[in-house]
Every structure is written in structure tokens, then in C-alpha cells.
Image (tube, rainbow, N blue to C red; front, top):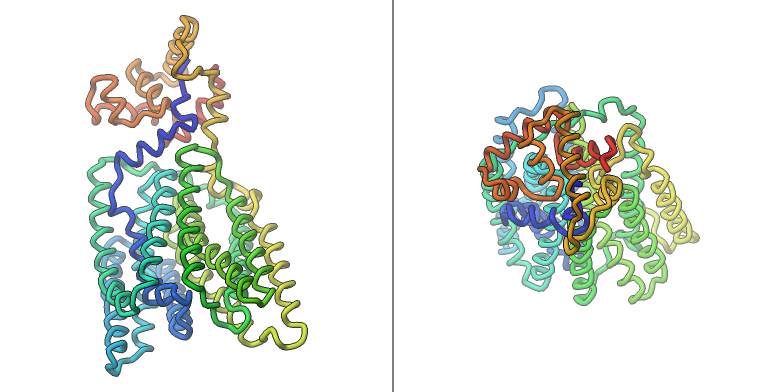
Length: 495
């Protein structure tokens, strides 16, 4: 019988990712640092007042314009490359203008905000092109690792002078561009084509996307109200709570990597959102106390939820983009517009209807809780209808192992009957899919969790030869990834 226990929470997926790890793949952390340094004042105050609002609205406007242009004219590689250079220049110039203003020179702050808002749209969005070349597990790893790494950098910057943060915001765009370019070169060297995914979301009704966008808008509106409570500006976090926020966000990201990549446990889209909602609701209950400790703890939970939201939305855009036939960058553009617009609308609501006006406080809290409840209904496993979001992370290798075999642990010797079962499995694969004996051996080793390099070493063949066998076997079995391979073996009932 083929032994799959190497995949059963043993960390084989993490070992494979780390064997091909590069710091260049963490470029999203650099983008996040730029955002916090320039747009949110290094997270010292979690906000930069009018600067944050202006950049956010410019970002929303340009994201919508770019979405319209992509729909009408497409988004070829040359156009993406040119826009990336323009975005890098704009983000750099924005930092320079803010630096000159900090030095007391007369500059146009509105121009600085406009350049930053325009530049960040594709300055960050260009990284999605790289992520679409990753397999789901690898994409999730670098999404969470980038957020965790960025949080720790921002924590340090929060205790440095503002001048240092602005200087870093000037360097960050060029550093991000360099890391992105190098990352693409590293993936080119892998000589691995991205498996084509079936565009299952093409048949999804439009109502699904309307519901998802509405749910996101409501959630972000609630988050904006909570972040702007009670005066329309974010609550100042004392240094101790800044540490809790950033270390907490980083720790939750590491926990996510452990659960999804190391243990290979199922990760459901609806579960992630319910966790987000839990943080928001607890934060609201704490800040409603209006005492310093309660508001500090509540604001910490809310800002932590906001940080984790970045990873959730990024992976959502990745998951939709790789399963739809239209331009894969459109989901990211739409999310990139809805996300800040709704949040700023929530802050405007608090600023317009301050909590000292009669029963407005109770009304706001009730509204936020009702909105969170409606989001629970929207973000569930029944939407989308054709394929659950994060489905690649919801397939449990543990359950697959149990269905495929009763494999013993590595410390227990195999009986002759078990060895005969392994031969039978190979024979079954060869009979059902007309695999050659070598192709069947390669597939069996892949199912044990071995990388292509490890398969080559085991069979004493080159990695390129392994790739050829994998390509032929996948074509015969009509699968495109290890996840689909596991599912295929489960459905044919190999015991």
C-alpha cells in the first residue's frame, strides 16, 4: 500500500517551501511598511488623520479607474511593467515630498497624497502577478509570513523618530521593485509552469459577487466605525498596546502557518471571517466602556483584526483570480477599492454623529453588531455556489490518508501483505490511467510528500526527468496539482 503518512501533519509541505525559500518572496512586507510609514504614521497613532483619508480616497478612485481600463482594454504584460515603474516613481516622490515638508520646506501635501494613493494601487498589486505563480500552500505561507515580518518591522519603526519612517518610505518602493523582479527570476529558474485551473467561477451567478462585495463593505464600515470611535479619529495606543498589537498579529500569522502548512489542517473561508468578526465584536464591547484601559484593549483588538484583514483579502483575491477566466487582477482591484472606501465611510459616520448625541452610542454599537451578524450570513461555505473559497486549503490530507490507507507509522515495520498492497496500488494506477511503471513510482513518491528533487534522489534520476514523468502522469490522470492528485486517489477508492 502507498504510504501517505509523510503528509499527515508531518510538515512535509513546510519543508518543501523552505527548501525553495527566498527573502525576496517577502516583498509584500516592504509594501506594508511603506503604507504604515507614509499613510498611517508608522502606526504610532494608527492613523495620520487627513493624510490617511486623502491617500485612501485617491487610492479608491485610481483603483476603480484601473479596473475600468482593464475591462475595456485588457492588461498586457508590457502595460503592467510600465505601470509598475510609474507606481514606484510615484511612491518614491510621495515620500520625498513628505520628507521636504518635515524639513520645513513648502510643498504640496495634496500632491504628495495623490502620488502615494496612485502609486500604491499597482505598487502593491503587482505582487499578485507573482503570487499567481505559487501553489496555494506556498501562496498562503508567503502571505502570512510577509504580514508577520512587516508587523515586527513596523513595531520597531513605531518607536523611532518620524523622520526615520519617512526615509524608509523613500527606499521601500525601489526595494519592493527589486525584490519583485528577483522573485520572478527565481520562479523562472524552477522551470515549473503554473498549473491551469478550471475557471469554475465563470458560471457563478453575479449575485454571489454582489453579496461578497456588500458583505465586505458592511464589515469594513463596521471596522471604520469602531476605529473612529468615539471622535472620528483612531484611538492613541500606548507603547505597551502597540507591542501587543504587532506581536499579536505576527503570532496569529505564525499560528496560521502552523495550522495550514505544518499540520495541513483544513482552513475554511467562513471560519477565518468569523474569527475576524469575533475580534471586532470584542473590541467594540471594550471600547464602549469609554475608560482608558477598556478603550486601549478594544482598539488593540480592532487594529489587530484590521491587520489580519490584509492577509485574508489578499488570499481571497488570489484564490478567485486563479479560478476565473477574466483578467485575474480584477478581483484584487475591486477589493482594493471596496476595502478602504467602506472603512473611511464608517469613520465619517462617527465623525458626523458623535456618541455624545443622545442615544447615538447605543445605536452605533447595535448597528455594528447587526452588521457583523449579517456578515456571518454572507461569508459562509454556501457562497460561492460553484466552489467554496479557500477550497484548496480545506482538503485535509489527514482525512485523505484515512480514506486511502491504514498506513502505519514510520517506526512500525511493514508486513509482506502491505508491500503487496503497494504493488497493487501501482498496478491499479497503471491499469486505470495507463501509467508506465516509472510514472507510477514517481506518483507514489509524490503522494508520500516528497519533492521532485527528493523523488529524483530516491530513484537515481535527474530532476528534469522527474518533471517529465510528472507532466505525463498528470496529463493521463487529468490532474494539475498534488491536491487534485490526492482527491483523484481518494475518489477511485484505493485501499
